[in-house]
Image (cartoon, rainbow, N blue to C red; front, side, top):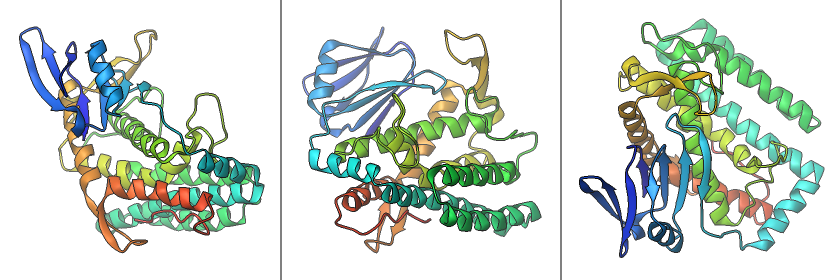
Length: 337
């Protein structure tokens, strides 16, 4: 179970095997520690020392974000005991061909799922610009297979992203909603605000699965290693952006589940003087509820020929990568939705 704490000023304390959420007037809610996998903390929430001890003892991750959804860091129990898997991961990184093959698989999954998402949307919209983008992305799939090194592959991935986001705004059937293109930091509009928050939550989910499996989140194949960057998690996330987050954002606006009044313009960070568009507290609660429901939706998982919740399919893909790295399966196959 994931717990999202968005109310400012609450206190988290422990009573036996339970966490209590407390305000000045007394306890608000209780949660069994055994039921929790992750806690997401938005803004000012206070934890007692006893609560932190209980969280670590019960193997619960805590992710800290600003009120606007900017990721700050996490508290997590010690992990990564599978040294054989990590050695296999490092050996694959040192092998230039294997590294390129893995990177191509991640990019292929992303572009294939971008195309599939645009195709599904265009069945209703019948938009010529979308049709051209879908055709262009098909060409980018050929380009990625022809890429002879990582620089060329990253160039193809960047071109495909440009094509995709150039038409992404056409998917919104809401008057007055403007999407200026993908702008990450700070997000200047509601669409970018939801995309950034959704991707942040997705990184946290995959990071937890990767660490629990024994992988090193910081050694990736497509994304170059860099200090403090979970490059492998970003690799694994590529195929999931157009599956989990992008359709959710379009759905929320087009269905009226999220509205302009759910956003406000606030300083991007307490230490910075520029502003960003972000969700109000009520808007944040609505988005988290729908994000959680999206991960609970069941889809068919071809390798096992069964239906699973999306969050479990993500977990299965992480396990699939582990088997590939250990030589138990021949090559990484991205999940195609």
